[in-house]
Image (tube, rainbow, N blue to C red; front, side):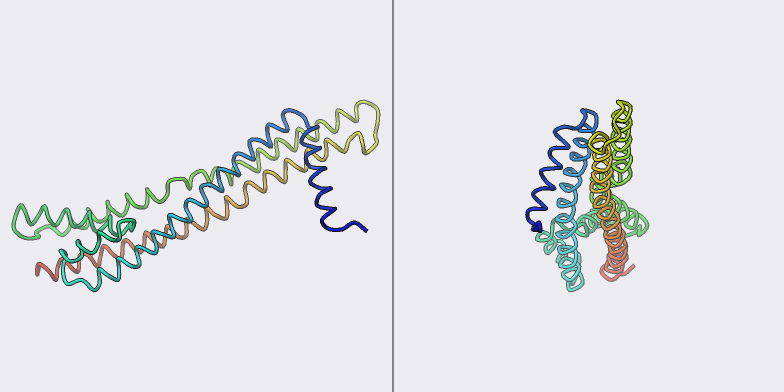
Length: 227
């Protein structure tokens, strides 16, 4: 009876033998899928870190914002939460408030402040979205690249059949190439699709939180300037 470890080693050996003896086009397909997979995992780990840090700093900044007595105290407190997207939104609103106070001595245009807050929110969402397009591309394209490799493997199997031999040793390598290409396409696509959907949900939640923060910022302005 073969042990699980021996079976695994045999599988690895068989896989590398298939790659080594495979056609050039099939190996090119596998190389492309490997690149897609590695780069996707790089994006996934990077975004996981970015989103985690952003949500943590957002939560801490929001608590400080709600405890603050006015804009100036919030501005001082915001310096320690600079990775927070909400801090960037606050900066956008604070700059508009400062311009109005400097020009007219008071806050006269709440719509301008609201627009500045919305611009800040959109900029932060765009920043957080960077790299997610690659995950979407990998999720949608990798299965088709794998399918192309599958077709190449089947073609090779039929070519070997054309030689007159119908034994499994003749057609097996081509069929194995086809199955490996299919599996490689799915291995690259499935994690990318799952990560893309997960990060999109997180992005929507953070966008909603930033919109709510903008409303709280406007409330603070009304309390501070009385109009």
